[in-house]
Length: 407
Image (tube, rainbow, N blue to C red; front, side):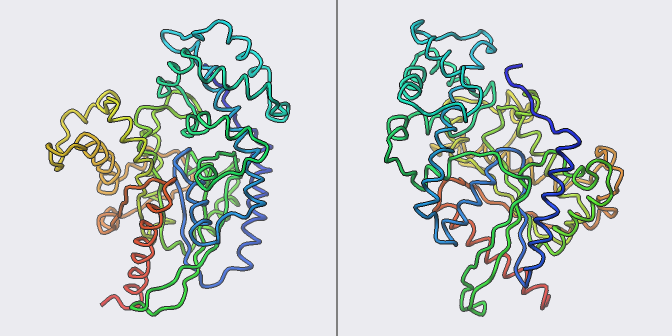
């Protein structure tokens, strides 16, 4: 396999769990009458990008100091992206080599850097990076990036090597939104949003909880076999007004990093079914963010075919106008949307889940009464997220009004 899969040990599980305990205890001391939102989604669905968007939209954005701190992270992204590309060239079928053999020495130099800390981002590094990225063989490898795991922002940053290498480089909002960094398992962001006068005016405080590292939802309630873990997560989930579930729609033709085998969209469907069926979230509203629409559209327009990964796509009937220039893209996004909505309409099979704690609905009638709302999103587009969150905010206000006065 082209990637070494990183797995947690029991000790690291316990250490991470203690850190989460400390965070939750600290947060709950300050908890007042805020609306609590829970942001979930499979790996690389755009969760950290949403966090950054909330900061841009509701917390005065990024300071000059924060922008300077992001420079090193973006430069590390350059290193990670080019290493992911070159590492996978020989694993493709058929394999790819550098088109210009003289560029191999630049590949070897980059691959000699085993950790970001060893790289001083010298002129030699950037020159090597530029040579490798512009090599025709490497470009061919990138065109087949659906066959291996690579960050979505790889091309975005690699196309800006000359800008990012400058000593006076300061990242833009667009750069920061696309920057990736491994983060802790759970984060929280607080912000206020103005309430429209027709709903009473004033400002509404929000707490947005983000669980960043999640593959098996039910496992969170029994980490390491400890029942205390279950109580910890219930404390976070208590009083959640709405779950915002992010889906990377562009992942229909790619595989997850963890095993380089499982289809990303199938993994997201599995996770969504677990979350939707959890009795701890039975009173929460659900909103699907069908994310990465820009990448989905680009893939479809470049000839990617969903039927190669989902055989039922061949018989899928879309309500979209076939004369529309964007028909194929709109059909693809509607198909993905309907796959997730179908999860909310079916009776869950408890035997599919392997937890010792029974956390799923007992009553199928309860599920049938629930609704799941959805939005097509581009998490890196601030205007798009602003509009979507305004819609979500209005929806939450109406939910709360209905709870107070259901008639």
